[in-house]
Length: 241
Image (cartoon, rainbow, N blue to C red; front, side, top):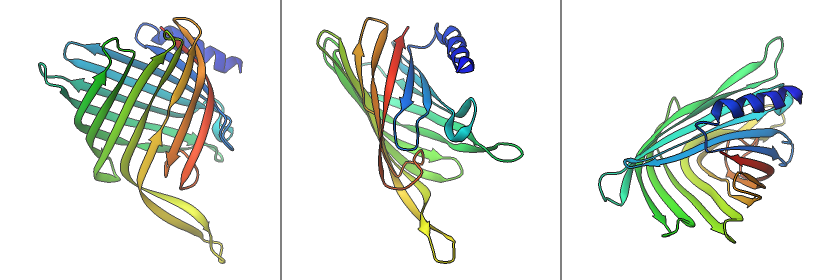
């Protein structure tokens, strides 16, 4: 725990000048019970906006320290007063699992996305939503895929309560074990579509600090061990720089 606290403190010092917020989530899902940190930044400018986040899981399946690292970075480019922006995005990461004599590792396939997005915001920016439609290339897996995304935020009660999050739907071939046959061989099933949403609800204690929760809603998402629909809530803290 002391090592983890040191990691978080060093990350805070190193990223405070760039990141918008740092989140710490304790996953309460069945057979999960691990910690995730998220560094997240959104920065608009006169040409559009830049967004990225970095997720790190700690202590999954008996791994000491970081067991998974994943990041996404996206750039929206606007042209004059056109309401539609060009959207470019990259996703990727890797993880590790315990093995003898050395731990094993796996890659989260790189994904390259390109498309358009359209944003709607209230005049006072108390709430808004962005819709994205993109071509998606998952390296080594699905060269011609797609993804549609919705990202939203809403502030209530004089900004004391914030409801935000995203929902993604995309095409990706995944293989899940659904059972074992009488000979002891695994029974596998391939799925072709994935849905993932992570709505968050925050109580803003002050300008910089919030407590809340995130609920991961996943369907055929490889972050869960089995196919189908899963719900994984978290207890969370957030510090905004």
